[in-house]
Length: 361
Image (tube, rainbow, N blue to C red; front, side, top):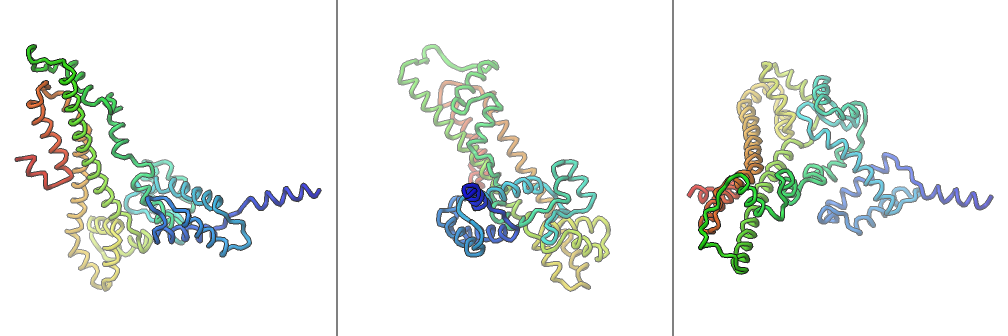
């Protein structure tokens, strides 16, 4: 009997039931450790975990808290947050997380449209997501960059698979495919040199071209990542009130239907402008909104153009190998070099404006 009781006590001490208050203190402790630099390169240090264990033990002396349980709990919370964030990061205007209900809030029409595009969102209509904003401070940046976001190296590998080209043999396969597609090599029999030294020089040239090509691809990838991060940051600022209240404020101004839609959407997507409008006297808000409305419309247009700009670069970047396949290949480096340099310079100019003059010079 004594042995059974001892086993039961061991099982009970090994288990830990987490409460919402415990989760709150745990998350805030992680945020604090992050703010004081105990999360280098995105990974919490041993010192951070020691500090968090100590804080939880002091806050809940009757609970059996240790490092393993803390790691398991934050991993569980991160997984739940990630499942929700990956869906609602695609939500446009009209959606906001309410700190009161701890749920996502939107008009029925907005829900219907969003669920049609993302069926998984239906599960979150009446499901609370506690501590969402705090977890976003911890893991939102990772998810925005892609917790497992595609790195430049992974992007190159994916494109190589799509084109049927292995990354390590890009240039060699281009030569082979060009020959298969009828591209002729401008050579004379007397100029052909199959000596080991010639083969070594040819291999070195290919490696040099491959290095330049991959460097250009990384420049485009970095430019797209930076632009996307800036847009995400501009559109994910925390709103000071639910979307319904913002809509009510806009409606009370008595704007025309089209002006009301533009103003509502812009205020939802730009928390800073919302704060500025709310700080204006009520009787003068309509005049203030009407004064900045043309600039709001222009800003929306510029965002659209910016996304189109990135899309064009993506298409150019994807089609680049195909363009190279169709080049009139030669075995003389003097004829190859100018064409390849021109293409690579155009790619680099996409991310460095200082190179644009060179690309057209």
